[in-house]
Every structure is written in C-alpha cells, then in structure tokens.
Amino acid sequence: MSPKPQFLLDLERDGYVVVPNVIPKKSCDDFVASAWSWLEGFPYGFDRNDLSTWTADRLPFGQDRGLYNRYSVNHEDFVWKIRTEPGILATFAAIWGTEDLIASFDGMNVSLPVNPKSGRKDIETTKPWPHIDQNPRRVENLELYQGIANMAKNGPDDGGLVVLRGSHLLHKQHFEKIGGFRAKGDAGADENGYNFESEDAAWYKEKGCEEVKISAEAGDLILWDSRTIHWNSAPTGEQTRFATYVCYCPKSWMKEEELRKKSEIFSARKGTTHWPNMNIVPADKEGYFYSRPKRPDDSIDIADRDRPFHEPEVTPAMLRLVGSAA
Image 1: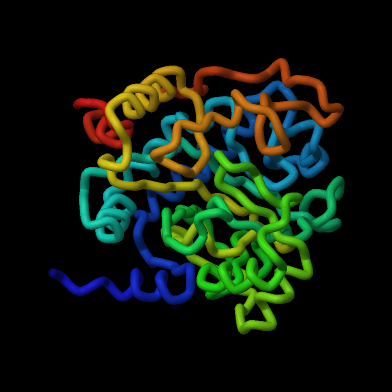
Image 2: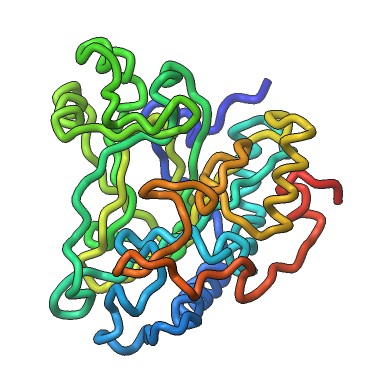
C-alpha cells in the first residue's frame, strides 16, 4: 500500500489543508471573467465597474454571503470546467483511493469587498456563524471532505474560509460536556448540519483549536473535513473573492436507483448541497438555506432560471462525475 500523501496527513490532523497549484492560471482567469459576466447577466443592473450598483437590489439571491447556489449556476459551463479539472480530480482520487468518483452539483462564491471606500456600503461584514456540515449524530467518524477551488488570490483581508483547527476531533467530548447537541442548532435527523453557539466555539478555542482564516493563491485547492467547525468571512480590502465549491466521493457510495436520481437532477440542471452521494436539492426545500431565490423584499425572484445561461458541453468525463454511463 502506498503511503499517504503529506497533504492528507495534514488534513487528517488539522481538519483542513491547502493544496497549492492544483488549477492552471488560465482556468482561474477564465472563471473570474465568466463569474463577473454571470452577475451582470441578470436584469438588476449590476455593473462590475460601477460601485453604485454594488447593492443587494442589483445582485442575485445569495449575495449577502456571496454564496450562489440557485439559478442553475451549478451547471454553468464555466463552473463545470473547474469541476472537471484534472488536478482537482487527482487530489480527490488520492484521498479516496479510486478514480471512479462522483461530484456534487454545488455553487460558487463571489463576495464583493465590504468597505466604505471601494466596496459595498449597504451591508455589514459577515459575523461568524460557526457550524459543521455533518450530522451531529455521526460526528465520531469521517464522512466527507469538502473542497474550495480558489480562483483569485485570497489574503488576510480578502474574506474566505475560517476554521477552528482540530475541532473535528473534539465533538464527542464537547457534546458530552453540554449533555448532547443543542436542538436549536440541529438541522434534523435526515440533514447534515449543526450550528454552534458562540460559547461553544469559545470552548473549542480553550481546548487549543486555533481560529484560522485561510489564505490561498489563485489555483489552490482548500480541503476540509465536514466535521471541522467553520464559517466564511467577507472581504474587507480591495479584492473580490472568487471561488467554486467542489466535492467528490466514490461512485460506489451510491446505489443504482440513487444514481438514476442523480442523473435526473443533472438533466434538470438542478443544484445540490456539497454531498455528492445525497440527492438533496436546496431549491426544492424550505428553510434559510433552502427554497427558491428571493429578492431583498422577500418576494420570489421572477428572474429565477431552471437552465444555465451557458450550457456545459456534456463530455464523457462529465457524465462519469454525474454517475451516468459515458
């Protein structure tokens, strides 16, 4: 058996890791250009060169945290091009010990800077929202590694992923101390999520879990354990954050009927959560992170879409990640 690569050892120890130089520069540049154009493609009047349009009423649903997972952005050609990048696939193949992978149909992040001089002035910076993306009933075992394909340089003031280093290993101890997980933070028995209170996060820090705002270069791949406590922060400098969420697991994790459903979701160009093996479509559900996109006044967005602006070229490599036969 081959020894584990160093990045995987670091990932297992810390609950996160940055794998450098995974995505070519041209792929990053093309993604950034396409993401700007995607934002400008809606009828709200957003203009990347006009700061007066950097407001909630000029942006699609998800703009408050830069998390775009509606409007079929999950299947835009420029998103699929990153999802099928060889370097990303090779990294996840090394993690799971197989090249027979399936992908999630997740979205992207475009977070405009929040500052009075050269960014958005209509919102405040994001407050920490410590959470995990795994069911609290099953936190003793690893179930998934998540990924962020970093498309633009992401320094200390550029927003991005914040983690509590090593927190993935302390949940059993924490829940025993507080008498079980809090019902208020539980996403449900059939869901994969749990929100922590600020005092919970403080407990992990007291146990030595350092708060780390992850910095990365364009083309780096950020990986983290779904049990690692994390949140995203808004950029406060000059740089807009550009990233897309990538996640893969072995195809063998899904049954044939589940794979058929996944293929149907792909054909309908619907998006999913970051779990590749669970056919969860947020836009078909209700709740804060669910339901159809809305405008700032809470009305349903009439500009909602069920197909991407630019359909991806359906290739054998893509169909393998969907779980369909090539």
